[in-house]
Image (cartoon, rainbow over all chains, first blue to last red; front, side, top):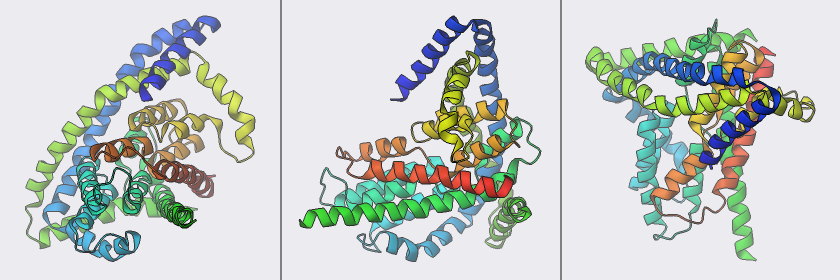
Length: 197
Length: 176
């Protein structure tokens, strides 16, 4: 899918430029934008080093583990079909905490481990269980405390206050997460109703 | 809404103080741990580079040719009713499909409109308020061999839609 979109952006762009005589602008942008992308990544280096460095302190101090303990009662409500002491619950908690703190690289392996355990709980069926869909909903809603990458790019383009979107983003992502869980519940009850008919 | 702006300014410093105090109380060698974690940050930023170069070049070609403006002009009447600038719609459409694609579009928007403009802020909040639904489904279900995705895609995409409207709503209140 993304391969098609990527190629289409080039082809449509080149075609449009050929028809509208903007080919010189396209030529110019080819190399300028490649350079811009590399510069953005350099901008990311500073923010990511700082953020992941801080997160390592939080991790070694056991702060992340403590937070997952605090979230356990909430998660029990969100995942009623997962036994509270099952390893799946532990992985779900680690996955969520990693997402909240913007540790995408740590979140994915935990999410996959959680899915494996959930599949086992579901008797190894090839169709997703209720909890598996809930875990996906939780992950696609992108609950994040600090959008570090966005802040870095804002800095790169000369924002006067790169962090002024932190609170709005937090409010938006919380609303999205709650909505995702409600939508997930709705679809679950709809499946159940249909199953009974 | 100076409250939201003030809150934004306080979240990051508070978090830093909490982590440093908690770490020191738990006798973690804070600076050593910081450096160790920072190395991961470096390799993470560098590993994004080829993805972002590919995406930003493709998007920039699309914009420089004039096709992007033609597309947003086409969408303008549709979006005027809900108060959404048409320039951010490509980002909204890309967000569930590809993380780096969306990142490329965000960079493109922040470069062409100022980061502190309404469009710049809306794009920033949109990028942070949802995640890449298709990627998450592919990776998570793919890894455990689930082929029938059930309601997962519908739930994810509806949540993305809610996320876009939440972003529009909150940015209009805070900065509109």
